[in-house]
Amino acid sequence: MSERSKPAKGSLAEVARQAGVSIATASRVLNQSSHPVAEATRKRVLEAAEAVGYSPSALARALVTQRSRIIGVIVGDIVDPYFAEITRGIEDVGAKAGYLTIVCNADRRTELEEEQMRVLVDYHAEGVVFAGSGYVNDPKGEELARLVERARERGMTVLSLAHRDFECPRIVVDNRAAAYDLTDYLISLGHRRIAFIKGPAGLYASEHRLEGYLAAMEEAGLEPGPVFEGDFTYDLGHAAALRMLGGAELPDALIGANDETSIGAMTALRQAGVSIPEDISVAGMTDTRLARFTDMTTVNIPLYQFGAVAARRIITGESDGAGDEVVLPHRLVPRSTTTRRGGR
Image 1 (tube, rainbow, N blue to C red):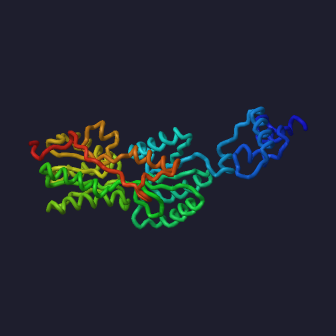
Image 2 (image 1 turned 45 degrees about the vertical axis):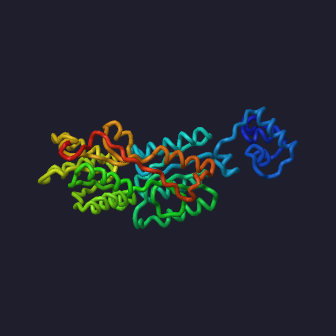
């Protein structure tokens, strides 16, 4: 054999040549295939691998074993602190077990989720976590549901951390109850005119939080509103507050559908000389680091725990004894941006 045609040092072909077996046999041994191989042959292959310094690629091993130690996380917006904290929970648990976490940004677009799902299937990811909410009556949802079903039939673990229109185990929080509890808290402080800035139109999480707010207002016999459009971003929270400032009178309190929205609104109010919470109480939802940095009243949703529980289920198959759905608790966190009406 010429130097040019010799297998590369440390390659699978070099292991096979040194052990005197076929490449297929060497691959079965090194990738721990269930295909029967004589013990003496197995020993020769392992000794040859050590001698040539063979290190199998993770992808090659995955093609044989169908186990890649990859966890895919499909997020709605990669710069949103909400998804950052979830991803950290997944990565921390996964890394301890030797798993690689791949984060895919879908920009809250179902067609991008489909593309990312196909790639993760091609990479034989052991699990995929859909970290974001789906859309009500999503016209593209059926194709995504088919992809998820096929992936699960192939043995992939698929989990959702929010309401989705496809079948898979879910780890969720009750968004309606969380928004209800926050609104009820503001009502208990004597606030009667409570404004609300919504999340992205049609998103289940947005709809459920709005429903919780409306239910609390109705139960208290109060007229809801004003209600402003939003998209979970600082910019639309800021814009909503500017529209509010153009009204005849400020409401007693303001709730944003997430922390980033509320901080955008709070910034606009303060820039206009409005005192918080003396002139208006402001609250958000989810309790990201942004809320903690600004000492803002919010509802804690255990984002890191979302990710940690999801990763454990993928790695170990653990279900926390809750079947196909785990509902994690939310918790009201009063801080300095809210006070009793009139400051009393």
